[in-house]
View (cartoon, helix red, strand yellow):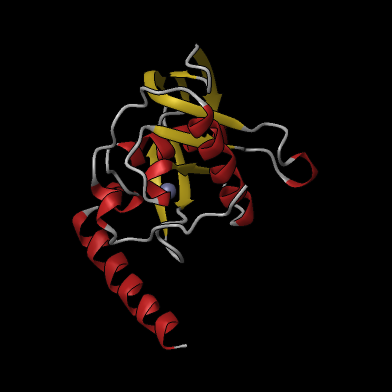
Amino acid sequence: MAKLPVREYPDPVLKQKAQPVTVFGDELKKLAQDMAETMYANDGVGLAAPQVGLSLRFITLDVAAGEDRGKEFLALANPVVVQGEGVLPWEEGCLSLPGMTVKTRRKAHVIVEAQDLNGNRIVLEGDELMAVALQHEIDHLDGVLLLDHASPLKKRMLLRDYARDKKRSMEE
Ligand code: ZN
């Protein structure tokens, strides 16, 4: 396995609409392993392929905490939210927007259709953090970032702070 570098905003790959996964084989399994290692190394709940520079509709997730990390690992190809209901206010961060948190309103309960690593169709349901993580990662596949959930004014403020923090971290 190899840990991959995480692309950060404003990397253009993050704004692209990703391409469907059409080949299910060893290469996809290797990608799942590399993304898992990258996600765990960064303490992430989820990771989308565009975040490691691949414009592909593929995500990894693990919403378990502490000792249970690794037990709820999921790798999903071509995930789509087919049903969503309720409203869930949340505060989210993103590995591609280090240092930023955004208050969002997500669907409280979602049903997602996807394919597993062998191309088999799977259906899963999510509430709470799982619902948020699924929506967050699927957003990445459409080039939608947390920033896009903020109002235009809030977005300007977030970007100003982000640019300042990024400049500072480059100077350190
Ligand atoms: Zn993200």
